[in-house]
Image (cartoon, rainbow, N blue to C red):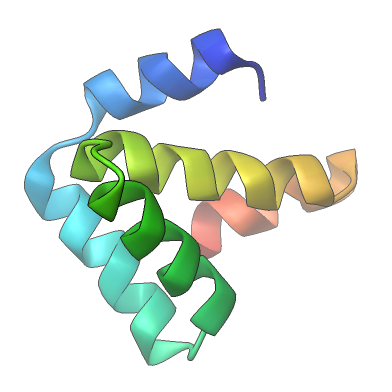
Length: 74
C-alpha cells in the first residue's frame, strides 16, 4: 500500500472499526501488531491512521495472493 492509500483507508475508518480490528489482534495474540499500533498512537497518530498503517504493513509484508485473506482477518 502507498502512503496515499493508507491515509485514504484511515479517513474511511470509524473509531468502532478500529476498536474491532485491534480487538481481533488481541484475540489472535498478534503482539507485534498491537505494539506497533500502540507506539504509533503514543507518537501522536490518530487511532485510524495507526490501524491503517499496521494493516498496510501486513499487506506489504505478504504476497499479492494473501491480500484478501489479510483484509478478511483484520
